[in-house]
Image 1 (cartoon, rainbow, N blue to C red):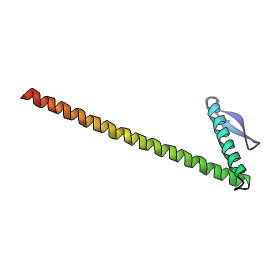
Image 2: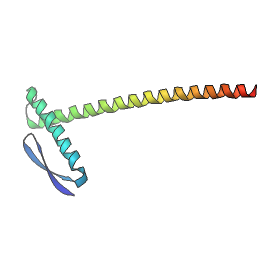
Image 3: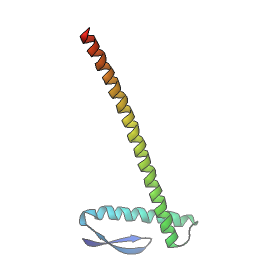
Image 4: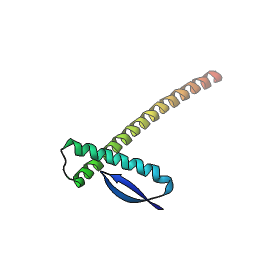
Length: 101
């Protein structure tokens, strides 16, 4: 595991990181940096620590919303698949009845 340098709000940090995880680490750092700059620019939150906490909360909220949307989408797909299975079962049942007549 190597040390990788990232920059957030013009401050450098060394983070332990596997070589194959470097692109994701840098993308994560960019995401956090952008969110913190957005919050700081709004002028509503003062202090780096408070900006960091608000950024973390915003990112977590966005992630939870995305996960919730995926779960709703998954449930919708499951419902549609169940309806198709029921329709197929009904058709096959009708065919079985026709074959026995």
